[in-house]
Length: 331
Image (cartoon, rainbow, N blue to C red; front, side, top):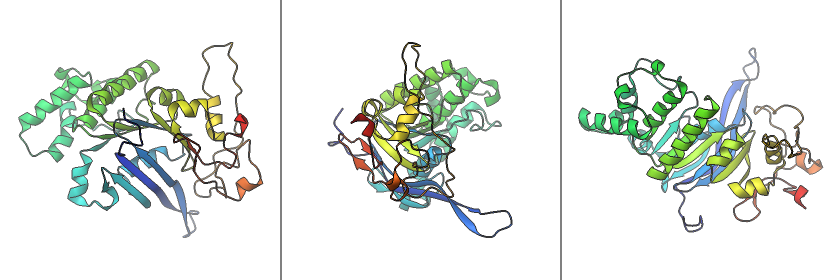
């Protein structure tokens, strides 16, 4: 694989924001902004997997859906295949949808219980293709075989399947158009551990066969380590560290990433690891802390952290971090 310097990004996200409006109280007309995603930037290259990890409520899923414009971003720039995705309207946007798909977290709620499996998988084709029903049926049956679903289940309904099988149906629906970009929104978190491994291996195989790029969202650092090429760590709507997978795990720079990694269970009981316990709760995105958003829970926080927001800096080999004292424990 070529180095990132010689490759062109498939997707560029620049200063992406998604703010929701809400009332400050049930009896007040005053609006507040919930900053679910606040100034996120990254690049995604063809055929690679960018893992996105962070606590629940940090904005991972909102970021993924904003990139696809399933929810409209408040601000920012999204460039997909050298095209400004934010400026597309109606027919152009629908056409681009064939190249960008999503796998949802809940493999039951994301499937229409009134539709057969064949109809569910065929729906994207019916929207995008102008061709005969026989052509569509042929592609659906082919896709079912690719994801490991027996084609005799074509006329069955979602409630007749297990959780793992339902997620395979969701994956089949997502890949039936042969997309170039896939957002995987915690696709294995609702599954048993043994089924998780099967689904992850399926996703890796599909990526190799079809050359898709993944944005893989998860709160499980072990899963992220297994499937990702690069990893972005999110906290309170911000990307605080992004790096090649190996460098992130071996040369952690941000205190929040350090705390997350310390919580990964160690299979060897003789191996001891210092566990970092973060104090307090995740602050409200409606009223984020001043300066560095992590300083209220950071074990390295100093006076400057509450006053000035750190810039995202490259510390070498594309390892970027937003911290005033990045990696100071390694010195």
